[in-house]
Amino acid sequence: MLGEGIPESRSAYGTELRQRREAAGLTQEALSQRAIMSRTHIAHIEAGRRKPSLEDARRLDQVLDTGGFFERFLPTLSPRSLADYFAEAAGLEQQALMIRAYESSLVPGLLQTEAYTRAVLRTYYPRRTDEACDKVVVTRLERARIFDDPVRPVMWFLLDEAVLRRPVGGPATMAAQLRHIAELGSRERIRVHVLPFAVGAHPLQEASSVMLMWFEDAAPIVYAEGLHTGNIVDLPFAVHQCQTLYDQALGDALSHKESLALIAAVTEEYAHVA
Image (cartoon, rainbow, N blue to C red; front, side):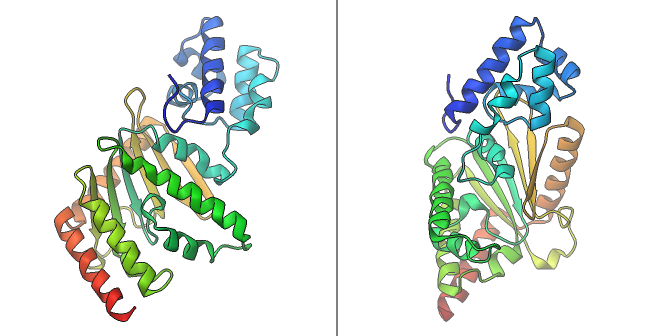
């Protein structure tokens, strides 16, 4: 069944891979060994959650003797309103049962208000046209519809205090943004934790943005993002390391209740000068 949030082209691509793999008499594990890919990666491609790289597609074509099919259809899989390096992660987050995210300096995209998003986009280089900015805003707000489901995914947001203190867009924009986070944080399936400056060094300090995702029918993955780059990690050992670092950092953070209280206090500071 086509999952909500998965582009039809990716679902079709994954179905084609599964059918051709089975026709060749190969399990996911056997194909992963021959194509030099992880079994988890292949499982996510077949589920329509992940887009293979060009090299992945070429290896699949070679192993399955598909005459270049998987390489030719790669360009149809990425939404144009998303950066190529993030498109895969965006599809994954729509299918996750649980998401745990960490941000070092900016409000996570899923939590951003329109005004905050536009303020961030104004800093991009090269500058984007108004039309291009509008597309990004619409896409980001569409991603946030993930909160409409009252049950899944369960979401934890671990925010460095810098996220609250950096006045992106000015005091009024920040006050509205923090109120939005507080409102989302009042929902039972969404937890917000702040890593206060007083903690000092912490296990995730070298990371810019990290998102851990768990699924009903596949192994967990990690998405880590830097400046104009993003990588999905699915090797079990590496995923486990990231989970451990996240748990350690979470142990240094304020509780959900304490975090919402700090967010409310900082909101008032912005509102006072707006």
